[in-house]
Amino acid sequence: MDEQMNYGSDYKSIPATSIRSGVGIEVLPDLYSYTIQIVNIHLVGNPDTNEFVLIDAGMPNSAEEIISVVESRFGKNSRPQAIILTHGHFDHVGAVIELVKHWKVAVYAHELEMPYLRGKKRYPEPDSTVEGGMVAKMSPMFPIDPINLGSNVKPLPADGSVPNMPGFKWVHTPGHSPGHVSLFRENDRALIVGDAFVTVKQEYLYEVLTQKLEISGPPRYLTTDWKAAKESVITLSTLKPTVAVTGHGQPLSGELLTESLHKLVENFEEIAKPDYGKYVN
Image (cartoon, rainbow, N blue to C red; front, side):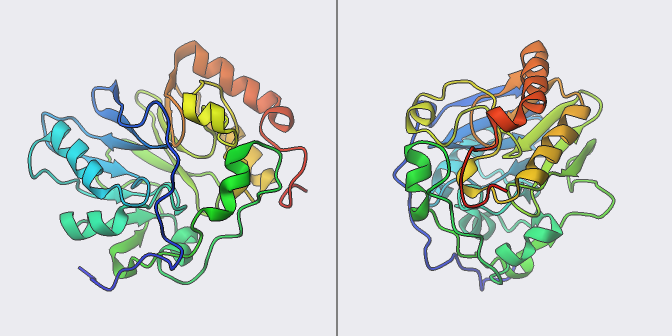
C-alpha cells in the first residue's frame, strides 16, 4: 500500500454532534447505518458471511470508533473488502487514511473526485452567506483542502458496477460535488444516497442536534451546482427506491420515502434550493 498519504493542512476535528451520534440501525439484514456526530457511515454485507463494504469514512479522528463499530457487527479483526466514497467532503473521508493503513484495503470513488482525493485540487469555499442557520454560518471552519490517498484510491468501474457489492450500481449524482455518487440495488430497490438529498435540514443547528426527520436537498453550504443537484434528485426519484439511507439524517422507507421524494422533486426550489447564496444562480 502507498504510505505517502496525508490529509490537507486544514484537517481538524469539528465540534458538532447530534442526539443520534453513536446510534446504529439495521435498515436491512445486510445494510447497517451508523451515525458519527452529524454524519452517517454504512456497512453493506451480511454479518453471517463476514464479507462487507464500508460506505464513507466519517468525521475527522473517528477511525477508532469506526473500527469498533465494524468489529461489533462483523467480529474481531474483521475488515471490509473495500471502502466506497460517495464523495470526498471532509465529513465523508475524515478517517479514511487511518482505516486504509489499518485494514490495507482499496478505496473507490468517481473519477471526477480524484483531484480532491489525490492532493491536486481543493473544494470550493463553503458558503457561509447561504440561506440557512448556524451550521451554514460555521461552514468556513470546515476543511476543504484535498487529501492525498495516492494509489490507494481508484476510480469506480466505468460499467457502473460497485466493487465487492454484487447487485449494486453506482449512479452519478453531481451537484453537491462534481463526482458525487449514489448506490442503488435493483432487486430490493435499496438506495444509498450520500448527500444528493438528506433527511435533516443540515444548515440549521437545532435540526442537526435533534435530527428532526425532514427530507431536504444536499447541504447548502457545500453545494455549488444547484441545476445539477436538482437533476440528481430527479434521477434518484425515477429509480423508485423502497428504502434510502442518507449521509445526514435518518433512513426513510416505504410510502413515507415515496411521498417525501415526490414532494422534493415537485418543490425543489422551495425545499432545497436556497433563496440566496454565492453559488445560487
